[in-house]
Amino acid sequence: MANKLDEEQTEEFKEAFMEHDKNNDGRINGKELQALMRYLGSIQSDAETMEMIRECGGADSIDLNGFLNWMGNRMSDNHNESDLITAFRAFDKDGNGQISIPELRFVLCTMGDKLDDEAVDAMLDQADPSGAGVVIYEPFIRNMFSQMK
Image 1 (cartoon, one colour):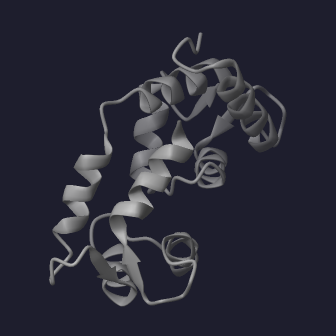
Image 2 (cartoon, one colour):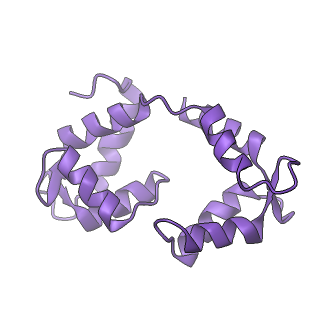
């Protein structure tokens, strides 16, 4: 089943899945999956959600085993801190290790899969807890990765 997840991760994801399975049929649809992924800290577009369902072998919903396998694969991907830091540097106009909150908000709201204001506010609250108006991205990224371990 989810051999790439440890016991604690498996239990956490299982509980979250069951909580979002509103009709208790052992499957979650796209809307429930988006809510579940948001609960887990990942904001997905409709297209990303449908792709995830397809990757799990479903047509319009996924079961617990498919979800756990997908999460195990996702958590073992080769994404690393340096890749994300490099991506943030592209938005660091001054090269000082910081991105302004207004600039980050603009990017999140207008480029790629556009996020709604609520989702952006939640992300920015985590990125700038002191309210300084900037994200010092290297420590922020390192903190994100340490929480994932």
